[in-house]
Image (cartoon, rainbow, N blue to C red; front, side, top):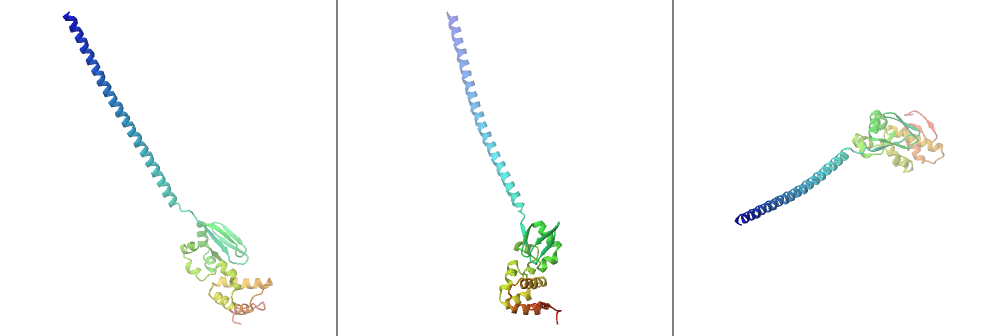
Length: 217
């Protein structure tokens, strides 16, 4: 009987130890599982942060590129002469008719200015962009040059004002004013006789009667 008791006790002891080992193993497994789950969540959070950071960097790069890539302006050139104005850039351009205009991309506009300094500075063409004028060192020239609007309205002013303006504008614009006077007369438009007489004296032509003569005669 003592032997059976010992066997039973031994079996019970072995079973208890196995149960304890299983419990420990389960505890360890649970702890590892929890730790793995925690690490997984941490990795997912880090990955999400990295993706967000990458997007922010990409957005900043795009914004910088957009800022650096300045949008090229369109520059308007207005024909100031009666008839056709020819401009030379990368190719030959024509603007038909006085006060008609054409716009060019900034690069082409700069080439035209470089190729046609005399035309640009004389007043045969008017550039309707104050920033472009400053950037291309034309401000001093434009201080005495009439704009298209001023030239259009010039002959409607008091004759004294017309004469004073005529005296200050570039030679080319003086010639344009004389041509405009002649064209208006030919079209039957009435012009103040004082303008005809005084401008005629200054340009050396009899604009009142339509007779031309040499300067100083």
